[in-house]
Image: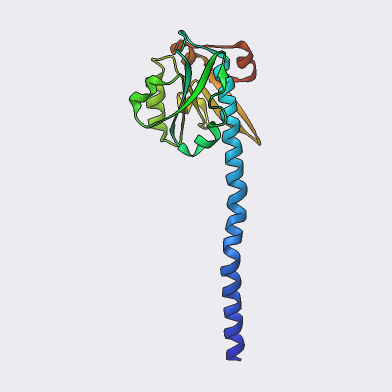
Amino acid sequence: MMLIKTFISTLIISIILLSTPLEAQERTMPQAKSIDEEYSLKAVFSLNFARLTQWPYSANTNITFCIMGNTSMLDAFKLIEYKKINTKKVKLKIISRDKDIMNCQVLFISGLSHSKIRKLYSYARDYPILTISEAEDISRSGAIINFIQNGDKIRFQINLNYARQAGLKLSSRLLKLALIAE
């Protein structure tokens, strides 16, 4: 009887130990894939946002897309690197200091605290920088454009006041697709 209990206990522990890594992989793999797909979509959207934005000056040779915070999305944004916006190439840059945002035409911040994000976007509004966030609501981010999840779809909000303050003009084609917040 004791031998059977030991055998059953060993069998149960073995099954648990062997099945846990597989279950963990099944739970994380689809999620990781959807995050990559989500950021790839956001990168392409961001490229199109920039194409539909008019800056008050002409950038020299590149349009610099800066990423701050969650740099795991960099691989997804590499999809748009060297693409063209009119005659200018897209250049990606990871930044970590507040003062580095002055060298950006597009600023995407992810994974920082709401207070830090609001501070950065508030600072950026004094410059012609297209700011993009992914907060729950644009009023919490302070960005010009904000991605939101609507069921299984990604939508975006635009704050026209922030765009005007930054000296940016957004195309009417872009505004027709957005949820407008003023």
